[in-house]
Amino acid sequence: MTDLPPDDAPPSEDVRTSRAATLRDVARLAGVSIGAASKALNANGRLSAETRAKVLGAAKALDYRPNNLAQSLHRARSMTVGMLSTDSFGRFTFPIVEALERRLFDHGIAVFMCNATDDPSRERRHIEQLLGKRVDGLVVTARRADKRAPVVPAVRSLPIVYVFSYVDDSDALCLLPDDEGGAKLAVSHLAGLGRKRIAHITGPRHFEAVRLREKGWRAALSEAGLSARQADCRSGRWSEAWGREAVETLFGRGGGAPDALFCGSDQIARGAVDALREMGLSVPGDVAVVGFDNWNVMTDATRPPLTSVDMNLGALGGEAGAALIEMIAGHPLAGVRRLPCSLVVRASCGARGPAAA
Image 1 (cartoon, rainbow, N blue to C red):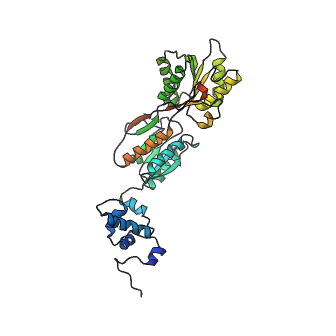
Image 2 (spheres, rainbow, N blue to C red):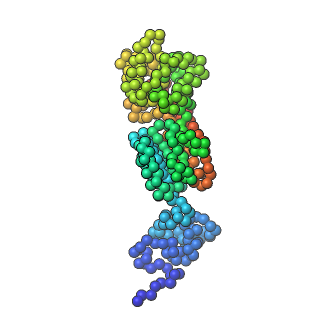
Image 3 (cartoon, one colour):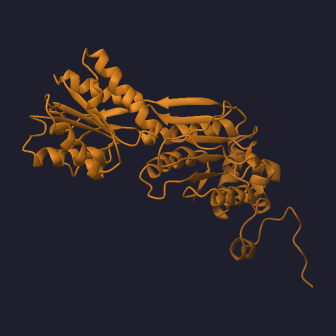
């Protein structure tokens, strides 16, 4: 029968190579207590620099990997968060989640992403699965920044951030782009370039973003001393086809034509530019055009390249990560925050230059 080594004996060569090293192994090799080894590896507690160096050296020699599960149970945290989205295409979610992950990674937190595709039963199932994983928080996002129902009551005690999505709940934290402010940026820029009749072609009016962008269009025209003619505001589908159709209507009637278009999306703007070209009108010579979303698939493919409002989705994702970290730490946050948009200037508006804040 082989004798077992005493608890204070250094780990044998077999221990170092045949199984994963434990905290006890590190402590033995460094010649310190388990408590001191834990403090050194977690960079807390009062220890001498020499002791910390011994522990870190032992951990490196043993290729020690901390037990994340045990650590999470000890601190009652899983170091994970869930992200629930309805954006199956990913156009709006991906920039948000990329920035969110960057912010959380620095704090050792991983993200589980789930796509609910506007299916309430699927959403409930995803939430149950995330709760089963004991996530420390939840981020809820969508493909359009419209109102939605709060997530099921079962997660009321869980920190939740709604980003590019919001709920009618005074206790919830909702982070959104400033659609109205973005529209004002675009229209004020066009007015500053000397455009006098700026029409607005936009999406379906049941979207709150559409109503806010129209509000910004009207406000900017008023501030510039220009008229917001009702006939110059056209609401339809989020599509290039609608952009072409709206241009044919706006420029095929009597009573003069716009010399600028502010479009509620880049898709609409690209269709509008194509229609203007087919009508023999130059962009930006005869008509300046500005879009919304700064979607490079559209802005780069438009000829000339499309000036567009950027919703700064990355900033929204970073802000969501920072807020979630605060909430997980026990600091409740609530309210609706609208983060500023920016204007990316390209040739379609008649001005060239870098992005204008």
